[in-house]
Amino acid sequence: MLAQRFPFLDSTPSPSFVVDLEKLRANAAIIADIQQRADCKIVLALKAFSMWSVFPELKPFIKGCCASGIWEARLAREEFGGEVLTYSPAYDESEITELLDFTDHLDFNSVGQWLRFREQVTSHPRFIKGEIHCGLRVNPEHSTGSTPLYDPCVPGSRLGLTRDQIDAACNDVLDGISGLHFHTLCEQGSEDLEATVNALIERFGDILSRPEITWLNIGGGHWITKPDYNRDLLVNVVRKLREQFSLRVWIEPGEAFAIHTGYLTATVRDITHNALDIAILNISATGHMPDVLEMPYRPDVFGPDGELAASANEKPHTYRLGCPTCLAGDVIGDYSFSEELQIGDRLVFDDMAHYTMVKTTMFNGVQHPAICTWDPESQTTKIIREFTYEDYRSRLS
Image (cartoon, rainbow, N blue to C red):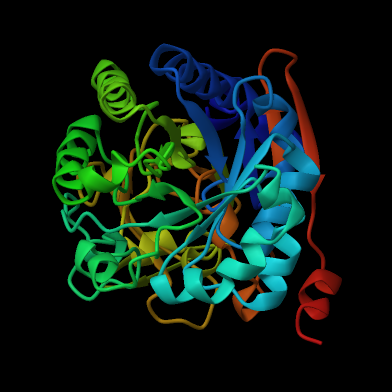
């Protein structure tokens, strides 16, 4: 039965996000091994996983966090410590002023942004002391992904400088810059990284060879903790970069830390029929698991019997799993189960810790899932946060 497979069900509310601490530690240990073998620095990308209550589980394994803006950077400094790497497509002056007091890396997306803030940055005492390292995000113009929404190398991309843009800039554009940063992967293997690095070297190798360039950030999107990921190749790519250009290499995965560590639990509220059976759940795809609609992708679901649901019509009972909002397309997908679903049945959606939790909304005022942890070692659950009407109300005024 479902509760036997997922013992936390009896002690957590519905709906809930539940993070398995044992699986989180296992992923972190794999990543730490890569960090040691490749002699690189690895940080957690908060854009994918920012559940700061479990940061103590990760601190023994990695160097710090990377942030996509001022709020993530502040969270990294306040709750994780270690080194903070910050990149944003565009900053304003107040953000730069605040970031200069604590970020360790400050990466810029355009020549205009760098030149606008260069004097402010390079005159700061922490920059003069060597405590702030500035970089430029570059675009290798080498697409390896299949989903344009997640491809920073598509024509017209706003993310990263092409070589032509750098060449067209003033001669001293690299003054004050000590590293380059690229991020082009999304849920991809090290083979795609190797191909991207080759394109990077072709376009930017002469810049990487300059004596003032001392580091390279190869971004995230590396599925390091997937069972079939070629970790030896990743280690070799990083080592070759270090040796060829005498660089410190940074990696900033997010999803790799949290993949297959979390669940979203739900309850069947109603069952209706219109051409097919429809089960209305107490969770929302658009509100609680938006990548189901954006990617799109199809999450695995465990039914009341504890078994994995199948595609439509593969098992005896097929249902469209729908959601309680007014959005007509707020549908998770069509699934088949061995047994008929009943009102009040619990379902468990797998792999719901990365990106899903950080992208949730309170659209339509639907009850937001609680945030919980489960530790199989001690057989204990902990409810980290439950959300109330006041949480919804306070966001709007």
